[in-house]
Picture 1 (tube, rainbow, N blue to C red):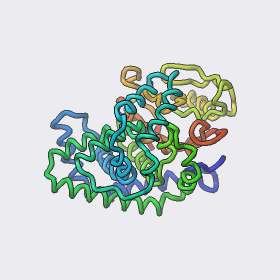
Picture 2: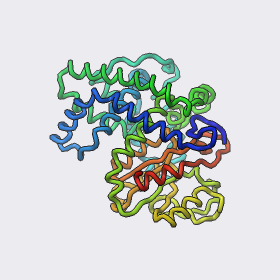
Picture 3: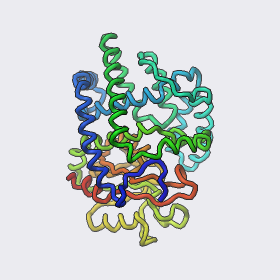
Picture 4: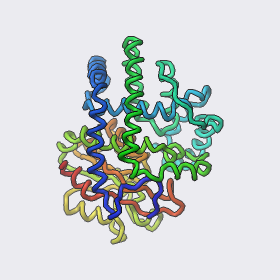
Length: 384
């Protein structure tokens, strides 16, 4: 197994230490975010008054504010430098690739070129501090996020915050942005001290591969910064806590795993297509998905292979089983976005992070099977 960007495994090949570390670090982060709770509660009143959505856990809204701070600091200077781009077309294409799987390779190729040319112009690659946000800038950056296809779920949530901020006094909003900026910098510093042992190769990978990914549709996903990995670590833990009650109330459970967990990902894999994705039929006894399938039969849960992150759309409200709770697994660059997508579909969910990334499509020339922590899966299923 090559270390590509991150690994949750310690020297003994276990990720148990990671789950202990991230639980403690998430508690620290939530404590650090407490000064934003009055704003969150005002926002929840706004949401309720305008009937925008069913109210969610306070920690989810705190995560949204932290995500806003991290993504603003990471991308706002680039997004604001892009004055003219086919934002609507790119956003629509990101949805087309989910609905038209046969056309997906062609759509991805075109999107990769358009994203690099319009949204990530070469001359704007230098890292400069993002300016303090204004409401007008938020609208522009929102369109940029939607056009990338990589931050759609965050962008949908940011637009609700922008609508709320428009109702508040200008001085209050400016003060809040300063608080978010302060939280972001403190989070970055704390995460670098306590989580960087799991993301030790992120910066090296970016440096070595920036040219390789230049025209690819998955460029933003694979070139994510170290702080985004840390944000997604905390985000996954917060989501598990916030979504647990609804998940535990379901009678049936399903585990969604990425295609990269299979020992074979080509025609040698005999998994059959079903409405929820692919289902393993046990063609290879050594395949980790087969092991999971057997464990599922013993412990009363189903297993579905989701070959592409875009396949989560198969779990949309029109297609899902309302009595089914889902444990989804993915690598750190896509897990939180996927968790929010399932939330938007109304699917009661939990998540388990892949111990490392290794798929051929995105990360590695030949690829190798990935894995996750079975103890953590059992904790999610039993909510221990």
